[in-house]
Length: 86
Image (cartoon, rainbow, N blue to C red; front, side, top):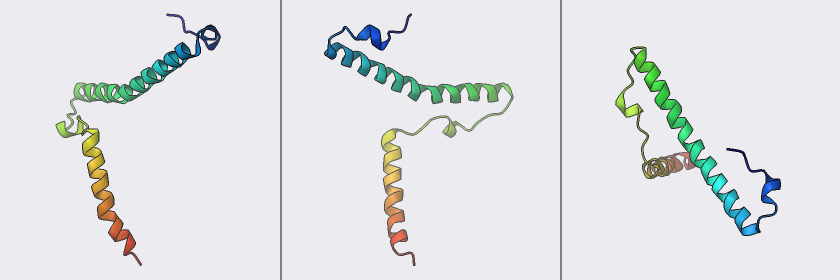
């Protein structure tokens, strides 16, 4: 599929151009989010072929909410320690 250049989009109404640009940005973000997972899955397959087995808990990332909660908990734990440091 040929790539649409900015020159091709120039005659389009601004609203349409904004929608297309927004869709491109969302698509790029989705692809960029998926690539590390793809690379990790490929690495796991290669390790498995080599006879190396990775613990299951390393193959699944926690949810964003869980990671945020842990981060906030760690910050709250560290804050008093840093404030009391001489």
